[in-house]
Amino acid sequence: MKIIYAGTPQFAVAPLEALMKKVEIAAVITQEDRPFGRRGVLTPPPVKVCAQAAGIPVFQFDKIRAHVDELKALGADAMFTCAYGQLLSQEVLNVFPLGVWNAHASLLPLHRGASPVQSAMLAGERTTGVTIMKTELALDSGDILLVKRCAINEGETCGELSQKLSALSAEALCEAADMIAEGDVNLLLQDESAATFCKKIKKEDAKVDFSASAEKVCALINAMSPSPAAHCLFAGKPLNLYRAFVAEDCDGQAGQLAAVSKNGIIIKCGVGAVRVTEAQFAGGKRLTAADIANGRKLSVGDILE
Image (cartoon, rainbow, N blue to C red; front, top):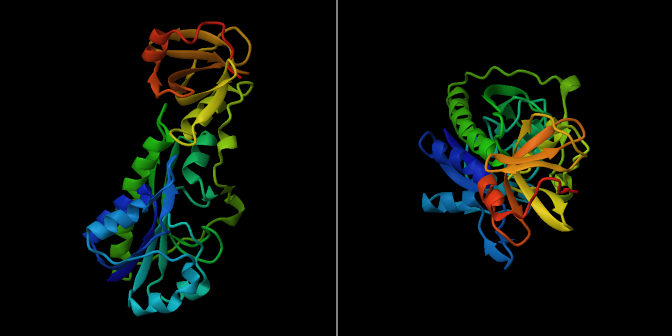
């Protein structure tokens, strides 16, 4: 079976590497190079770097729906997508005799959309996974081919969970490739009544509200780590928080520090308390709780806003 692979960020690299060993990849399609960092250096997507290193032709279409003829000319049987970042037209879907198949990082129909990993964490779910579905015009609504599940562990950050789900996507797409090539395709309709949707995460979504419950504060901090990073104010300056656990309740007002030690910063919430073990002061580097305690910038009784 010959395929085209479409993906863009680091999340999509492991599936590409796995599929290279499994099927013939006629081409890789990815987003255009984008400015990165404070200096705005034009940087290729990780998937492009991986594909070029393997000698696979790379196409960076501004709008893939305008390049149907080029897709047809590649002669692929199917297209596999993973965090590509563009919606596909019906004309694109019609190019591939064996269909277009997408790896989505949630247990569909939950968390359709742009931020499924963060959304599952924000919802307080303890299990998530990867769904391989047949792509249709409506967003993440296609029939399901297979599902892989994994746990969301206590204190696990979005970055760490994303690595697990990337590896799981690689495993799932390879299984899907075997099933599709052999014609062993039994699809399950999604339950539209259970569908939920998630939007692209913005920096303002990561502002911590300590009047919320400890569970919600903890979920926000871990879901926004490492980027855009949950943030609050300390003495009028930004403070980023990167990892948290629900802690035993304590006295004080919401946002007040109840303890500062090598084991963590205990912060009172509207209901309960959280223990933060990694943080970053404005203009500084990411620090462990032990580093913060030794630096003595934070003290019991201080207020985070």
